[in-house]
Length: 453
Ligand code: 4AD
Ligand code: MG
Image 1 (tube, rainbow, N blue to C red):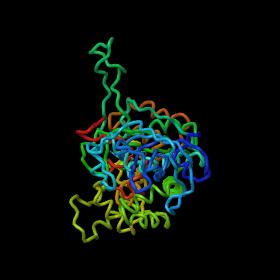
Image 2 (image 1 turned 180 degrees about the vertical axis):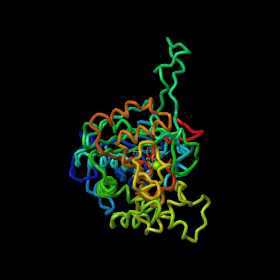
Image 3 (image 1 turned 180 degrees about the horizontal axis):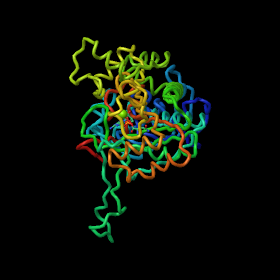
Image 4 (image 1 turned 60 degrees about the vertical axis):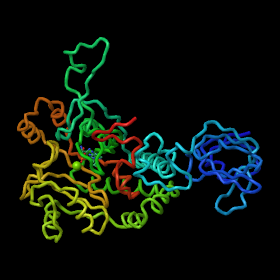
């Protein structure tokens, strides 16, 4: 007897074989002569139909219970499934009381409902589809960078820098440590959970022409919004020897396109579940996004568009104000509901590392955001200030020249023009699947006043 995953059994290449499958019961249907039930093991959306004799009097075979079934794979008489398993032996491994189990057979529960059960929601079709898509999208992004010659860098999670300077840092403290002296700081300097791996990538761009990192980042955002988490995954890339924002927008757009096409091709069934049942109509939006080149507008043009609109905004749209979610969503609609790049933001809005557009009439920095339908900001990036004198002046102004003396060194020893960006991975999943709330695209969401499990 060979043990098969459900996805392997469903291929239909093992007809007549004696096999064993293990999984969780997704439906039970007693009929006159036979008992039918479906088993799923997370390997694919479809479940395998099991046919058992009606003499099987098995009250413990309930929705959610864990089972092991041995039998013969047969061609199924039904069109919907290629094969079924004629059971010879059924073993209940773990019972599941259907009265207490929060998910009910044959019911389509909303993402909001299943979110209340972070320890159980992977047992639903929608969330297990999401997790397979998330896993495949991760692979797609890594293979995009591999194909394009980028080297993956494991940037640290614990760091002493505040890359974004936005004061949203979680400080790392040792609270219980056997030999720990309360008056002593473990690292001897304040240490934080990383908000971005950018500065570490910039170190590497002193030796590599292209590097990237893909890992968790942390921000103490006191926000209950549907697009912010305290712990989220970021894809960050840094490109050396580039003096143009177009080199960066090209990588962002190519990565978006190649990863999305990969996911649509490799997770068709799972993506379909979202586009058909969870977020109906969203597929057309995704197809439209992939059809056209992403337009590029400057921040100043964006401000003009906002000021000409008849829509009332809650936040000001004067030149120099940061774009808010409402503005970003308006701009995306204005550009035809496809992703849009906004470039050349006011210099004062951007962190110390952003490159000064010195000859611009209004004082801007060579920064770029990618805004996408339904979400707003998906990526933030910039050219970095590679000129030692300009960078030193800006750091001195902020009183940071000692903190960042190592960063200034990078401009002293073989400095090259370079730039990069960060993409919010959860926002990316929201964008391609049409999911409204960011908490529904990450296995275990962390946000203010919530750290379950
Ligand atoms: O725009 P941000 O802050 O850019 C940076 O951190 C740069 N240092 C990246 C770089 O150039 N290497 O963040 C990048 C992206 C945002 O566009 C957004 O998609 C996502 O990260 N993001 C969040 N996603 C979920 N929850 C949050 N609290 C997020 N904050 C940012
Ligand atoms: Mg940003």
